Amino acid sequence: MHFRFPQKILFKHCDPAGIVFYPRYFEIINDAVEALFSDLIGWPFEDMHKGAGVPTATISVDFTAPSRHGDQIELGITIVKLGRSSMVLKTVAMAGDEIRFIADHVLVCINEQGRPRSWPDPVRAKINDIMEGSV
Amino acid sequence: MHFRFPQKILFKHCDPAGIVFYPRYFEIINDAVEALFSDLIGWPFEDMHKGAGVPTATISVDFTAPSRHGDQIELGITIVKLGRSSMVLKTVAMAGDEIRFIADHVLVCINEQGRPRSWPDPVRAKINDIMEGSV
Amino acid sequence: MHFRFPQKILFKHCDPAGIVFYPRYFEIINDAVEALFSDLIGWPFEDMHKGAGVPTATISVDFTAPSRHGDQIELGITIVKLGRSSMVLKTVAMAGDEIRFIADHVLVCINEQGRPRSWPDPVRAKINDIMEGSV
Amino acid sequence: MHFRFPQKILFKHCDPAGIVFYPRYFEIINDAVEALFSDLIGWPFEDMHKGAGVPTATISVDFTAPSRHGDQIELGITIVKLGRSSMVLKTVAMAGDEIRFIADHVLVCINEQGRPRSWPDPVRAKINDIMEGSV
Image (tube, rainbow over all chains, first blue to last red; front, side):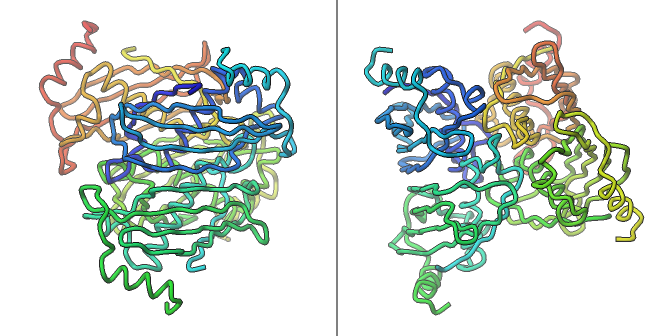
């Protein structure tokens, strides 16, 4: 695992059944990916978005157990694979020893025209270092 | 296809890149499923939630083209399979002839304790009628 | 009243207490204002946003009764006053005969640099017609 | 001021104009109030919601300057007044020396039936201590 993102389940995340409204999980995943880029990779979204972006191309999530208001969960993100312009991530969300969801997602680095582009060299180098465990 | 859900892309759906912020798509999918149950199946969420629920167990989405503010899209939902307590759906979102995303999702009918339960008989009968094209 | 915006209270709007999570009301108000501009004033946000915008400068809301999942509410918007670059609105949300909230808000027409600008002449003319009841 | 709540402006908060979509500010305000109750007052929402709640009765916000993606803002909450069942708050959001918004809001402590109730004695005592500066 390359990055940990803790998240308390807040009032805003929960639905009338008292559990997380699942679209909110995707906001949490997005926050975690944003933190991955700013805190670990060193390419914050607010800088990146002047000419590039990393939209989600595909995402597949298995919700294995519900989360309730007040639960403390932690998303663990693993960078599984780095392509020319893509990045494959696996995110496992745990509350203690219980898995709450597992997400497999693919991001694509795009240019201002929305076309796939190569990762910038320093970003690629940094991600490779992270994947090799040297960061 | 068993149900159509039109949706204009609104200001609230869009991000600084001017395209739909993808967690918002899951709210749209949720709205479409809520409308499917109230308008086609005849078991509205607001009634169901007194003792049952149909949370999403898994969802897998392929975002094939971005949507922009003002676009008119339409989600077409097909009920692919009905299990004892599960329902497999496929949702294809189109803007004219262009596919914007394809979602494969599985819902599970649960009881108040959050355990899987059989679909109520009248609901099962109605869904079978829909799948057979007799509704 | 110049514009009516019906809204069913959906699952996504509600919190663990089973009533509308109040930040969701501001999304609904925003949707209603977006519809006011596209459907009544004839200046849709998706066109406007190429060089102008109408952000909310102030908003004051009195939540007089809670709304529950499945409730059908209707927002009635009155254009109270039109300034050089501002617009004062009053929105009353009803469910049948019961008031759910009353919002007083002020929008400001801005240019690409985020500075207040005069309403475009045709837009000003149209809004004046609406306020005089000739539309 | 009794409580500080820092918040980085994230991608999810921003609209196509690149500034905070104002309904998102109300989620941030709600998060700040939730943190005020859990971290300062010692009555977390997730415990409170088994028989009580503190919904927002009125809120009035003046948006004085826009916030952009990546901005670091801080909400400063002052407990202005404590009534039998109400609490008057003033929240000022700053980015450095610039005020981004000022919110005046009133919360009401309610019981399970949604009727106003007195603040629990230990909670009232704690809030009084906070207001007197002895915490």
